Image (cartoon, rainbow, N blue to C red; front, side, top):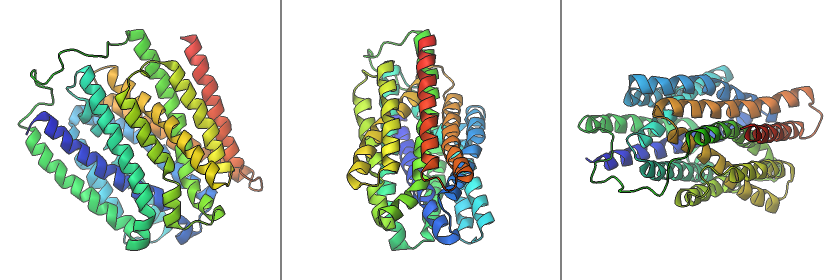
Amino acid sequence: MSPRQLKAGFFVLEWLNIYAVIYYFSYVFFHLRTEFGFGNRENLTFAAANGFLYIFVSWFAGKFGQRRGYFTALYIGFGAMAVALGAGYFLHSLPAQIGVMLLWTAGTCFTWPTLEALTSEGETRQGLVKMLGIYNVVWAGGAALAYFSGGALIETLGPRSLFWFPTILHTAQFVLTLWLHRRSKMLHLHVPADQAPKHSELPPAAPATAKTFLRLAWLANPFAYIAMNTVIPLIPELAIKMNLSTRQAGFVASVWMFARLFAFLGLWSWSGWHYRFGWLATAYGGMIVSFAALLLVPNLVVIIVAQLVFGFAVGLIYYSSLFYSMDVGDTKGEHGGFHEALIGIGLFGGPAVGAITLQLLPSTANAGIWAVSALLVIGLIVLLRLRKAR
């Protein structure tokens, strides 16, 4: 098995991971609404708890994988995720479901930084662009397909498939990791000399420029996840307003994920956006406008158009953060962990602001959405000031 074939195995792990993650975490909010009567405030609080834990465990997990080994981190991650959701199938109380989510989240934190690092290790700069392009397309495609098909699958397989179906996927990942680990012992993760590009179309950025854009992207990406992780818990309520079934909500609300996938395909094939602030700032502004339109205007056409803009915007912001994280410095695991920790800030911040606002202003329609929109505007101001200062 060649290094490229080994990395193909990592991409299989990545696809299985994102499908299982989206299947569980996107549709658990429908489950909470049905089983426990959750509304927007409760769903946002549940999502905020997930994000809060994600901040700290992913940062630790990135360092753990760098020091103790990537495969060890994957064993911990996939094992914890399988155990958590397997137990969730038999547990029906709300405290138990919260515990399931927290253990599953902790396991998830060990997977993404590690898969990012395994994708990037041993690559030339041109190879890094190719590998990250494949990585982003694989997970974005899996996410879009999972959300698009998830509602129909849950209606077909039954509501308890929310737990047993991703458990099967996580178990398969654990077994595949064992197999890949054995094969990897015969290889080092590097590009052989005869496979390495003879030249690169991507001259390295100046160190000062690279570090500046790394900080800008690290600032923007949490705000993108603030927006994304506010949208997902509110989809069940939006489905009620639009009179959509779970199956139909999966079809309609997956548009932005497909738009993000196409954004990744375009950004992978064209490198002109690298270290160009205009692209990052434009994407951020588009994200704010489309986020508000998506959740505040109950019109199907507006919702679909807003999702197209939203998907392209968050796609560029995420791609910037991951590319600059892997392009600057050699500690791929630690940088991947920090990249994911910043995502955790977004996973926590958006739902937390929304939930707190709904708690303080329960009678004000859409108060949480307006509060998160204001937070996104503050992020844009900080982004522009940081760029100007540097």
